[in-house]
Image (cartoon, rainbow, N blue to C red; front, side, top):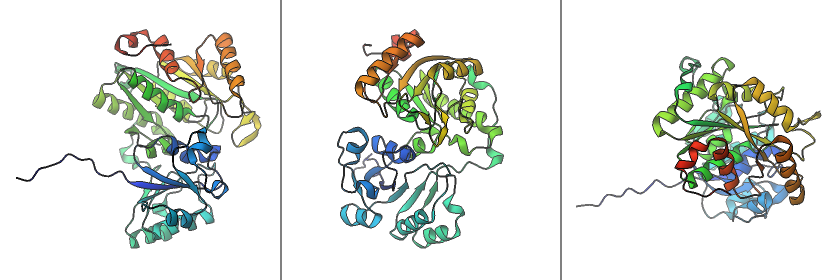
Length: 370
């Protein structure tokens, strides 16, 4: 009798394209995938500025064995494994492809690689790229394409009946590290014995492999709150978690983004963690727009929604370790809230932040708070 095995299917492999932007704000999709990817085995990154360097070293000063290459041809000639997927790893403000980027994508298709695209421009709508994908029998995966409008769901209010804590990770700007903090928080809460589910609200989290999520900025505004609510309800019904963490987008105070308002409305969180970049002078992509203070953003969030900010997390870009330490101490004193740097301090501080706000979760935790 032949034995059967329950072995998992192989993880698809991928090369990330991030020319001119790896390690920068607009390279946040590539940055996130280098730090965390459940869906793909990342073989390399393309950015000619850093050719030959270790990707982890560039991002976090920690080598991870994933190298950066100068071009698609360079990567394919030097990587032993053939990549099954080509991920467009940038998130430009326009959300559109440049002529150079179209050529690179076509080159990847002709090499037999499926394309993972997180832009607002859908590759399946591009006649030339679509024809090439059919010829070479590869997929064009448009992460942000929403379901047809006839299947979109309006807000129902049912979310208020869920028996779990919902925590939204919001920020004072776009690209402040809300997704990274969400991932670290979920990992730490699980480590401490809590049953937790992450809800992704952007393209990067979905590419990373979030089980539950919706690319919120691609949904017609009438359905944003409802689609997020329905996704959270689905996660709750399937998993029965004690905590649901909702990844934030943009900033409630930022006039260029409306997603934070939909996240607050759709998830009705009992708590918010605010992510702030103290070393950032102006808003990302808006040099004439000064960054808000944590105080003003907290006031806006708590005025706009029936929730409370339970802590502040720091993006340490443009800051020394001593500056981070001083800033954390100052915020804790002035805001009367716990504060910490998720990428620079022990993640157990995030656990302490959550159970400090919601003591009922302590009985489920097996870890020790600091």
